[in-house]
Length: 205
Image 1 (tube, helix red, strand yellow):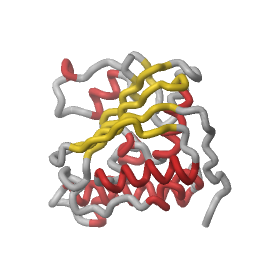
Image 2 (tube, one colour):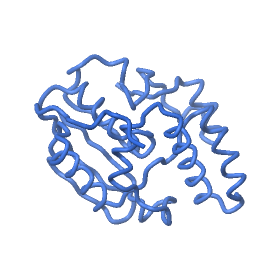
Image 3 (cartoon, rainbow, N blue to C red):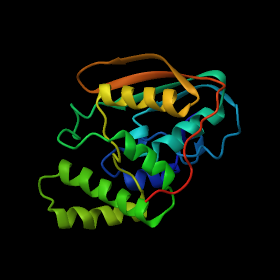
Image 4 (cartoon, helix red, strand yellow):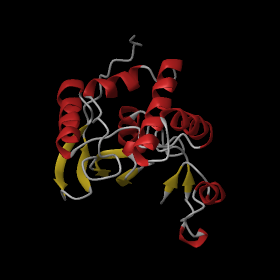
């Protein structure tokens, strides 16, 4: 079962450089941040390949992924390593920012922060952009696809974030295995456990 937040027609519109026959039609159309089209405890295995950096609220996504898994189910999370991709040069996402994104979901300040991330990603990727034109492009992306690399991690920083979320905030996973190819990407095999998350939910400044 393949999930995407856009249907096949919209995916082809958003990816004009990709041959139409190479774009896979999703079986389920829903946001990876919520997986709201899937019932609780439906799956034993979930693959999120180059997904979590695209969601603007990674903690919310991780909790949604846990929701659709049975206890003992596994998430294979494959993440680009920002040291080796077009994100090279961008600052790694701080742990506190992950908490801030979760706490401030839906607020205007969070949307402004998302706009900044989109502009930053595009400015880092494209030599022909200026800060001003990067912001203009980010506004268009925010209204159409809401898609970019919102967050950037190295292997060490992503592993540290997961460990802190599990140890300090009771994220209901354990790290079963992890590895990095030191060229492009890293992978984390996360096992769903029973303990409940205790993330702070009140808005912070």
